[in-house]
Length: 441
Image (cartoon, rainbow, N blue to C red; front, side):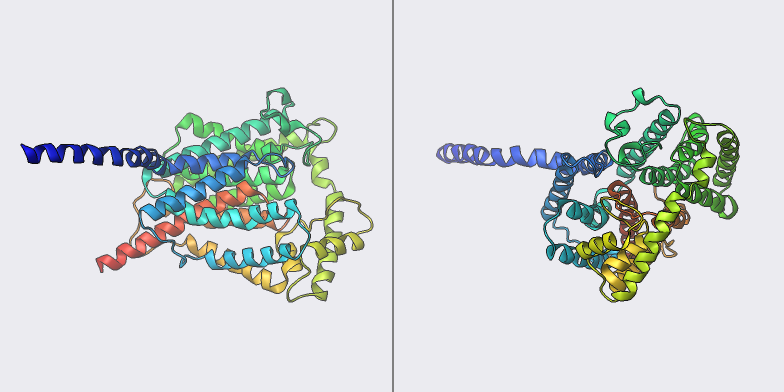
């Protein structure tokens, strides 16, 4: 009896001591299990955070929470970050190169925001995505989310095209004092090019979902009939070119019958849309006028000539961000703007960071292509998002991204985050396939 009476209070004291730990660990465990949801919230915040809205920092808060809880889960589960993946080392080098350049200049919040959107956020998402989206359930959540974003962007583009701006949400999309391209379907990015690239990439993902029979016929037909019109509504020639190229490449090279049929439908609908829109006046200018407009071409040619001359003066390590802007302002006399951009990602990196920066960027591109290579060791099962057959579509996605990068500077946080999220998941799948192959042999 005496022994029993001694054990009871000790047991109660132990339960009382462990109660706070249990109370804290349960919410953490629940949050760790819902990291995919936090990741999607972070992407939503990036989608609705255009660079002109400086007061909006929800994307930074969501990104910080995502990184913190991912690292915390890795610490609890004793997971270590794998730095043997492709893309990581050249991305780290670019972050170091660009960050060192900004540290030598006066503090500029916009410049640091560009650094985050261009390099830091994609690098972190590349690392995190493979840890978060590991099973079919989390991948399905990501796929549904991306299809919903596509539907939203298509709807906004159609509302803009047919001048139903009162239905567009959020209202800052139609605010003419923010951003550029106020006469085009620019979406929440406030830039028509970013909207067009996102529509193109997400449209290809919807095409892959159709290939895997994940889209019901009514939804698939809706996307097939409205996506070309939404692309036209961006009134951006680089977007038109990349969309047409991606559809035609898949039409003639894809081994999947469903994809070829869908691309044929997109080609026919796009052709009919061109025939109607170029013959019809929209507002004060037709689509044909936009196609023949040479003023942007003249400006870009002047920027390209200035950039080439600047590169020849400092080819090895470039001019740096602040000196590059000052020199461009001095050289470009015919055009007056607040800031000057080269409208070419490759040229800007070369002028700003020299051949060293260009070599690192080309290294990143090569590694991105390597990430999507099919594994001959252990083929992955079919049917789920980013399965083995998706890898034949991966080079087309990269082509769309890089083709547009030849005409604009890819500072678009959501677009970069989307691309490197997919790349991170593919890299993690490659790693798990390699480990499984080694263990089985």
